[in-house]
Image 1 (cartoon, rainbow, N blue to C red):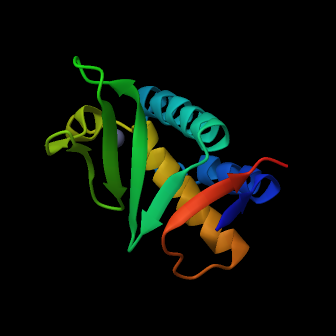
Image 2: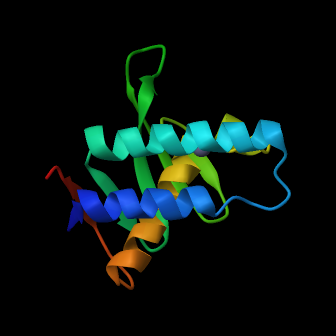
Amino acid sequence: MLLNQNLLEKAVAATRKNKPQHFGANLTKRRRNAINKAFRHLVENPFINYENGKLLILSDSRTENGEAKFYETSRNECKLIEPGNFLCHAFWDGFPCWHRAAFEIVENYFEIAGEVSPQGTVEVCPS
Ligand SMILES: [Zn+2]
């Protein structure tokens, strides 16, 4: 499906508002940065895959061997699945990461768009 830029911006705004109550200044700042980065990614790198409550994300970093890295992010977990199978460092440390921010944005997007259970590849419409 196509993600509409206007709805995407609304979804980002909704995600920004949804700050966890217990977050102090440091976590709030990290969360804000994560959301900004996720938003940038969703616009610049529009091919994401959301299926059964899991978002597959192409990392902006590469392995030492230059291989692409993929993260699988869900409501409860964020992990590097390709290559290997490791929890995301930020997630492990209890910090917000942009993968999970992207997940939240995409879920908010579907809620705003009235999509109940989207499947498969999602594409952001640039206009
Ligand atoms: Zn992560």
